[in-house]
Amino acid sequence: MLTIFCFIIGGFFISLKYDILILAWFIMKKLLITTIFFALILGLSACSLKPQAADTRPIFFYSTGCPHCQNVEKFLADNNVRGKYSFLEKEISDDRNNTALMVKYAKVCDLNTDNLGVPMLYSQGKCLSGDVDIINFFKSQLSL
Image 1 (tube, rainbow, N blue to C red):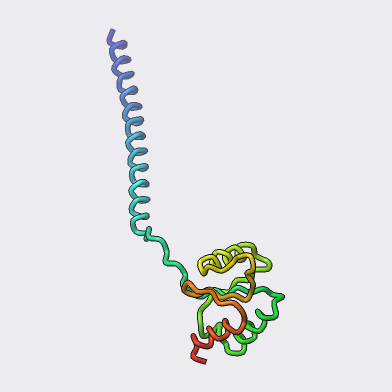
Image 2: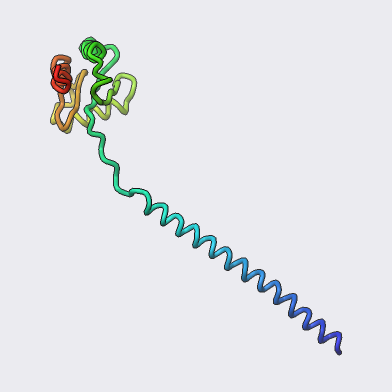
């Protein structure tokens, strides 16, 4: 009888030991998940969730085979415009994304998108077409 009682008590202790381990495992798991959740929340709140300001630099659209574009390119190189003035350059003949961007800005300027041509410059809601107007734009920006 005594052995049966010890066996029952021993089984109880073994069972209790495993229950405590399982309970500790679940508590640790919940703490880990909670810690990760709050770390993510703090990390996201530390980051700026505001949208980035749009790039306001002028965009020069050109094509490699265009003679008027080459006139602008020559002016840019001869006057070191790239070193003095910040603007974006988008080649449209080999990149559909750049072509789509040019069409998008042409629509902003209310240009007929059926006859768009290069060179074209978009700056602050205005579009300039042709080498003479674009060169004059850069001259005015650089006081040349």
